[in-house]
Amino acid sequence: MTVAQTMLGALRGTTGITQFRGIPYAKAGRFLPPVPLTTWLGARDARRDGPVAPQQVARQLHARSMAMLSQDESCLNLSVTTPALPTDANLAPPGLDFCPRPVVVFIHGGRYHTGAGSSDLYDPAIVCTDSDLVVVKLNYRLGVLGFLSLPGVAEGNMGLLDLIAGLRWVQANIAQFGGNPGNVTVLGHEAGAHAIMCLLTMWNSQGLFHRAILASCPIGVTPQSREIARQNAAQLCEAAGIDGVELATLSTAQILTAQSKLERSRRRFADMEMAFMPTFEDLHGHTDAKRFISAAAKSAAARGIHLMIGTTREEMHATLAVESALLPPSPTAIANRFAEITGSADTITLYRHRRAGGGDCDLLGDLMTDHLFLFPSLALAEALTEAGGTAWIYQFDWAPRDSRMRACQSIDIACLFGNAAIWADTQILNGADPNEFNSIGSALRAALGEFAHTNDPDAPGLPWPPYRRPDRMTMRFDTALGPIGDLAGAGWRWGG
Image (cartoon, rainbow, N blue to C red; front, side, top):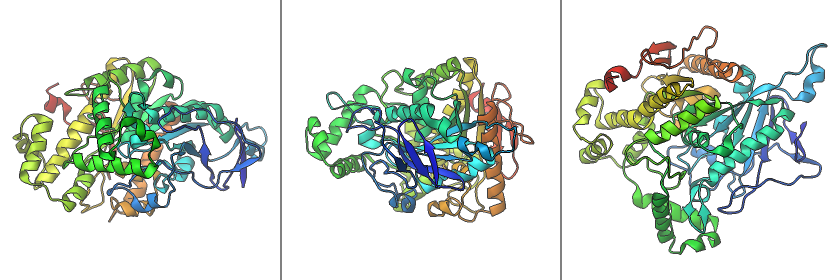
């Protein structure tokens, strides 16, 4: 057993690779902003995970891993994994001082309504040891309970305020776990990356982190306007059969049931729409993400925050594989999605030329990867560069041979955290060659470590130039690793 002292009290954690779990970082009433905690007496047991945000586990997610975690509205807790505590310094050779390590704060994805930082999928032990980092994983409020925006009931963005509270906890306490509060990298996946973009535009996040990694960020899905948020809230109340003020009196189960009912009524094939997500009038894009991208890029440049931005080659293939297996889409449904995204159903012909032998669902997956993830990510990198900042881009192309999910969303995160057995339930690693998996994961951890330690992911033996026009150098993670000029073909596809 290991003991660490925080500003609020002592914590008992596990030994070996030292972990402290279920650490409360704030508290909040339903639909209210988080507030600081009071101190406790004695040493608090931090050897077990705390509860996660109430949610209905998504089909395509890690159902088995999530089923093992308790849920509760009091879910504002985090975990810390560290190679060594400052109190371990007396074990070091004479004359060597303890050196605080860079900190990485991981923010999980799940379209703002599912997921948990405390899931075993994100066990950071190998990241800590390989990259010599202190890793923090946050749980925050999700769905209706985290993002309802309804005047007189909920101001919205409670989940983002939770993340700010968690980052403030890091600033106040991480030194006691061997971390350097002056060197904090936030690593967000999917909705977690989207949340980081939102945080970049919020004044109360200043000084809480110093660089950011955005993995599979759905930048093409912009924050909601207040009017859209109110419409979604009204539909939720209709699904629950109540007035808005009565939401505070419903049980957690009743709120989740109403949320699920609303989502089912709006569900369309291959739709990334989220009813409950961040609400920012100034960032909402009626037809594109230009305002969202510009605001995040200018803020990052002004704060001196470098960005590492990555996508997988086939972000949507796992999701579409699950959806199409349950309810095969008609050619008309696929044509409609092409028309909605690009303005013309005929665009499918262009995508057919670029994927030999691909079915219509494959082509739709390519389209959604381009327009929701890849193109907006490159636009963010270019906007940041134009604003005086620096960005690095990666594309993750590796996938197990014959995988029906291909290089889908989360496969880069699976390789980064490096435990294939834990990810078996997701099926995205089925048939993976262990040597390839371990080698690519090692390269990812090397780049992450360099970025966290030096503000530049350029690792020994793995040069990684910043992303700039006209060469648009992009790190390609596959069995052959290295930077490639304009891997996405932006020059000829955008004509610039």
